[in-house]
Length: 59
Image (cartoon, rainbow, N blue to C red; front, side, top):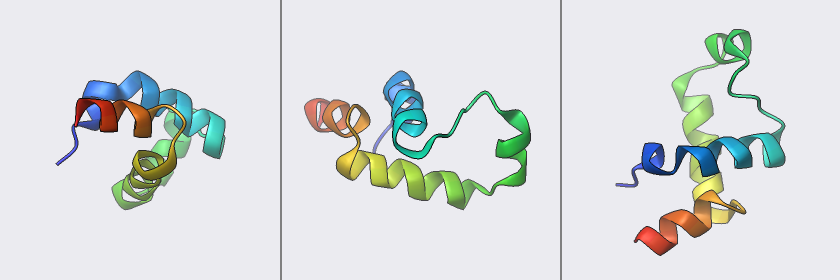
């Protein structure tokens, strides 16, 4: 299991850069499910410019 929270800064930057998601937009995040966020985080772990590298390096 990957600890995304250990690399949250990377995840936050990738979410914005790749998907245009501002994690500070609380209205957006309240309207979305955890599954919606999880799918995007999984994608970033696979190919994200920052999160993927950080997770593989910690691996």
